[in-house]
Image (cartoon, rainbow, N blue to C red; front, side, top):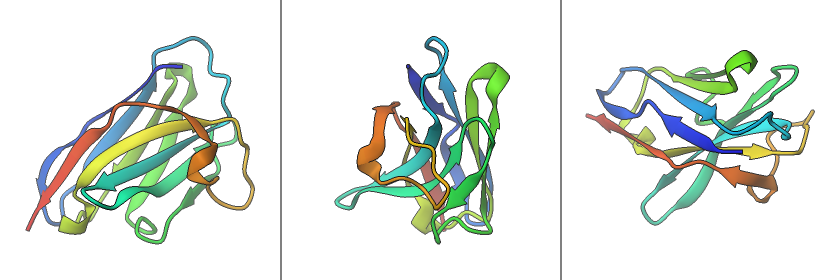
Amino acid sequence: VQLQASGGGLVQTGGSLRLSCEDSGFAPTYRGIGWFRRTPGKGRKGVGCTNIFDGTTYYEDSAKGRFTISRDNANNTVYLQMNSLEPEDTAVHYCAATKVYTTYGCPPINEYEYWGQGTQVTVSS
């Protein structure tokens, strides 16, 4: 498993970005992908997650109504579409993989075994 997040950048408030999480390794052995973000001094917080095989998605409150997670299994890529961005969304964003299949919400962060390098998202006011 070799995850790589990309697509970050600088946008103005109200703008949009689409992040990609590509697995360039062999056939995935995990069941879910989560998106997280880290701001200085605050640690990593969840944004949302998806089950790989059925596409069910779950979002944290900060992302509901603004962000959408989708997947392209043929290309081992999961996307995070972020709309209506706010300065509070400024963070390094990461994707991570878990072997947990969930039906109740995103698994705890300690269930994610594989992490990619992050991509910086900066939202200017």
